[in-house]
Length: 147
Length: 147
Image (cartoon, rainbow over all chains, first blue to last red; front, side, top):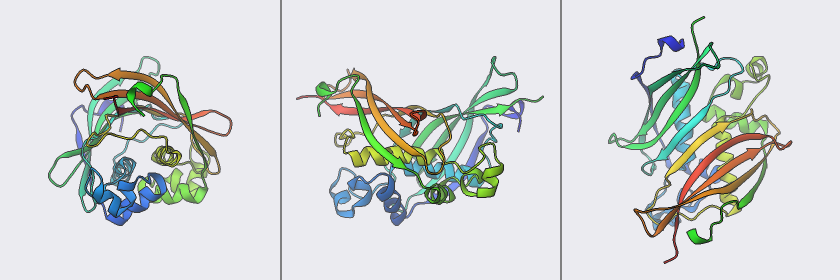
């Protein structure tokens, strides 16, 4: 996939993942041990009324689905991602929810500094069973230009 | 901690974490199964020359150290984080590296829409054994104002 072949507006479904409660708690015990992620009773008493997933867990699941879909951009050798912007968690993710992930090209930028690369911006999302947005961020990646 | 007590320039050490190779591979097999995260031989042949951690793993380790340090902002009930900006991975994170995490207040914004809350911006970082920056992002959080 060359930069020239990337079309603004192209949206790809990256698949779905149903998140079990034990996975939420296992991830959070290791990486985000706040009571509303790891303790059933404390979570029930919290503002969330039950266990919710760590925001980083939802982000990692987006990556899982991107990689397993085979639809990520192949980074050119030696080029590091220019990073992410506007990462937001819009709604709590609860045990048993099925999350559906997507990525959509929203912008392309020709780089004056690197004639061999273009910058592609994508809006990445996770939505719940009802279609409500739960997580989103803008990803940026360098994509090789046609020689 | 009230909004009024937060001082721009305050930097907090969140502790360090030495990342074992098996943890890199366990995380990545589940959440980011790219060859240079999960396959020793493929990683050795890759542009990285060996196994590196998933960027989401480094991010999750920052969260682990924040929570375990007890130095996160206590979010007011019912208020969701306004999210993160400028998330960047500056250098690959390799097995056995000791990462040191920090958070620094870089800005405070009084909200016209919510007299009971202020917005605090922090620059969050991970650095390697040599002090080189490997990961950074800007975190935003709502902090209650003095009644």
